[in-house]
Length: 121
Image (cartoon, rainbow, N blue to C red; front, side, top):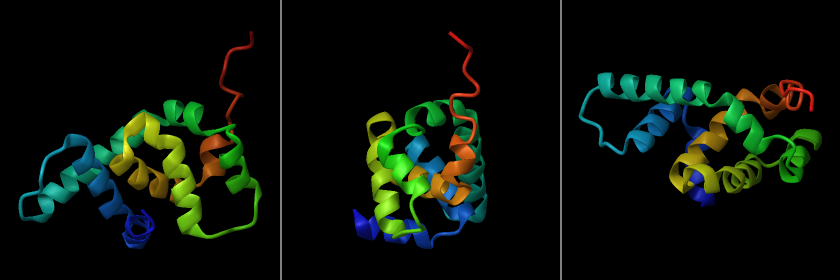
């Protein structure tokens, strides 16, 4: 898994979103940049549409808190940890890509309002 994550960490954001879109749609790419752009737009929308679900799944977990609160560490280890957290929800291929995207966006940004957007019980 670490080689796959290393490859993902080296991709730019557009390629990451493109791979996520391609993985989620389970279609192969044709040749040309139009397909990558369409996959990337789908991947970006998909992540944005699931922010609340991702927040509920990820934030507040001890292993995620350790990444957030600890010093900047090994990105491979952080990505692997986050992949394990989300893999049960979205499956391994998408989870690895999603983990790298969320790490780049920032877990603190995602989790900053965790618990604050829930109605009081």
